[in-house]
Image (tube, rainbow, N blue to C red; front, top):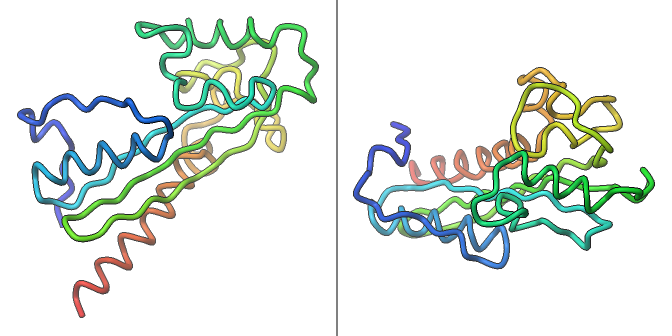
Length: 176
């Protein structure tokens, strides 16, 4: 089985993430590419959900501070919105939804990683909200973790493990 990335298909139009949920965005991306290529496709969408903010930024995580926001802009807005909020009310989770789409079948799986939004940035690794996403069981932010550990426990890692199970089941059934 060959694995190809989207850069192999430059003629595919830009994928617009305008869904109201992570699942809608992941499915839209995977369906668009599958319709164009007639190949099995996998796509994801990920968001940070902060309980104190009613689940925001959620599906708008990458543009929380505006349409042209940088990672730093988004983190700064989040920290400002949570200023003065006690630790026990700063609970949050990263959620990743993976859509698996073929010309004949589709399925969605998700992975979640629970944490707390810290009061300040910590660590040099990762990207996005990683410097403020603290995992209490490990005593570290995502940005402080070695990449292998982050990949093992992260929302995306968990979602991709589930996606692998689905893909293996599909492949096994197609061989019968």
